Amino acid sequence: MKLLDMIQSPDDLKQLDIPKLACLSKEIREFIISNISKTGGHLAPSLGVVELTLVLHYLFDSPNDKIVWDVGHQGYVHKIITGRKNQFSTIRQYKGISGFPKISESPHDCFGTGHASTSISAAIGMACARDLSEDDYKVLAVIGDGSMTGGLAFEGLNNAGSLGKDMVVVLNDNEMSISKNVGALSKYLTTLITTQSYNKIKKEIWELTGKLSRMGQKIRKIVGRVDESMKAVVIPGLLFERLGFRYIGPIDGHNISRLIRVFRLVKTLKGPILVHVVTRKGKGYAPAEENAPQFHGLGAFDKETGESIKIASVPNYTEVFGKTVTELAYKDERIVGITAAMALGTGLSYFAEQHPKRFYDVGIAEGHAVTFAAGLATQGYRPVVALYSSFLQRGYDNLIHDVALQKLPVIFAIDRAGIVGSDGPTHHGVFDLSYLRSIPNLVVMSPRDEQELRDMLFTALKYEDGPVAIRYPRSAGIGVSLEAPMQELPVGKGEIFRFGHDVAIVAVGPMVHVCLEVREKLKEHNISMQIVNARFIKPLDFELMLETFEKFRLVLTLEDNSLLGGFGSAVAELFADSFTGFTKLVRLGIPDEFVEHGSTQQLFQAIGLDPDSIYKIVLNNWSMIRKSHRLPKTHSKKN
Image (cartoon, rainbow, N blue to C red; front, side, top):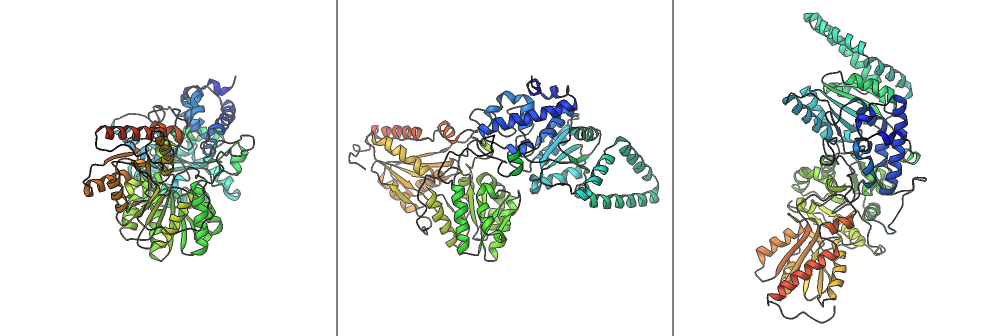
């Protein structure tokens, strides 16, 4: 019987000795690799924290003690040993468990995560709540080194250090290595400063010198300077100690006995503690160790070879964007590529390879990325900021205050717009049209296919009067030819994609092609549907919209964005302000709820935006209008 079969909760871990914990870590790695090879997911981060996760649950008492996992990419081991092992095969699948910590899923998930750098702020909030309630439990924030590039993490550190509350920040460092020339000394110092006798002596000396009036204060200052000088040379802890934390580390994050020894001590210490743990991303699986970025988050793959199982043969929008902006940069030396720790995910890795001097990865700092781009734009450059839709939310004030207000020509390439699938509600890009279209001076557009994405990038670079946002989905394109030269589109002008006589759908971006299937279904009822490709969400094509209202008695809008404040709302505002006819307007989009995880097809069906659901909505509304006797008989001529 495998050890993993015996683990139903963290309490079961506490019955194991160190050799058995080491055996369990191997079994868990095999279990994760086997499952994620079928479902896809964040493989490398979780493989790197197997021993660390086991030790934290071995020594601490979750869910009474609170363990906050930053981002959640490293949370798979935590899920497996907290009662979700038998459900793990459903991870990121429709109606299955989430790929991230989720409060409603388990009492062990004390805080929901999905975006980076939030753990320290949440943990200090929990520590303050504990003290206000006079409770007794430990609070830990486990944060990866990537998340430490986010400003929010340092805001949390600063506040935690000043408050002095009992809490532990575990810095999972999976990129830095300890250089050989100082590694042995670092390990020696770590061993020294984590022994009970050392800490007892240090405490007693500190208390004694505090009673020696002026001389005691001088001794403290001298000892402090020597201590800081040594630490600055051999360990990277001085910054954290300046922020008010007791620094411990670096520690080998795959050495279970050493981790247990250190965290046993940490449980006895008071105040803010930072434990620096060094791990290897992808640990235990050679392909992931050799190419950690590729295995950070991926789809299904062959676990024997590590090769991805590719379904789509046509390029996705991300790839088309990356190659197009790289191509355009050869012709325009003002183009600069910027991303926030997502060069591969946004397609800017192509740009980085071909134009390294004009590429900037600013780390997980979206607000900084936006303002950094604004600075470049003031000096005549054309920055292209590539971010996921849900991540751009973090730079919203910067976009308004630093870019749009000053009418700076920054281009925002907004990837993962709309429903993104298995990453779920933390990553669906369903709010961008709502939060962007209210900003003055900003042009917002969305392409119906890959070639139109190329045309929009070309157009954005020609546009000098302010910022431009282009939003596009995660999915593969529809397979159109990309051989045609790029064309400049007239800003604020849509197009009639298919002509019709009875009803009209005005669609945004990839939803235009969803309409084609709806149109074919309606032909069976002798209903002729016109499809309008809006192209521009802002400025809206007022002339085309009013013409559509005049011609049709039933007009629908279709978008993969929230219905609240989105494209349909813009059309409805125009309808209310400028049209006095009898046309019925129906808005279709994401309902006012957070959409769960699953395949995009399943999710579109669940929220009623698949072709069959849209077809039924059109048919029902058309029948109601016919029954009201306001329309002549249905046109019978063919489209």
